[in-house]
Image (cartoon, rainbow, N blue to C red; front, side, top):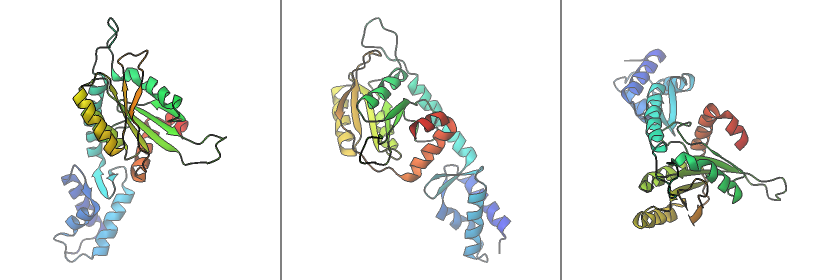
Length: 262
């Protein structure tokens, strides 16, 4: 059976519909070619390529060589956003008796300021919540280190991200998210309460040292968080595909912040 371009693209859309988690380019081609031995490979290749590049409102490139119907991306983002917001809003008791209950959002601005004060970022800002969407979540703080006018050596801008957890029992969650942020940032930090158990802190310190993630502790005091570095982050080269993907999301959700950063 020889397929025309419309039939090729209909088959491709059916495969995308049947794979809500996304499908790789090579697997999509193989699926469309199945049971169509009379259709030249180049015709199928061209038809699928045309579909993926022209119907971008319906089909998203979610990873290198992987495509997903936009409606499934939206559904995934909604689930991830709900989970992230539930964590952000989780109340925690302050270390100072009689103080109001705290959430991790109470520390976003002060840690952004800490990054600037310690020359880790030229400009940093709270982000948090679920503004970027996506399976990899949204950093609580994002910053950029750029060369100043007086700097002799002009280096490329470096993206800095941070994941803050006010609940002492969530170090593993924080680590997983901070490692994921290394896809699109040059430096990534985990910021956890000093009340975190010694066993968890020992494991977290080892994991951060192995994977190049920065580790900072703080006190559950909104006015005096007293950030202290335990492990310095390693400057690494992020994946440019994910850098641009993140910046596109930031452009859509926080265009003013994008302009301040870059």
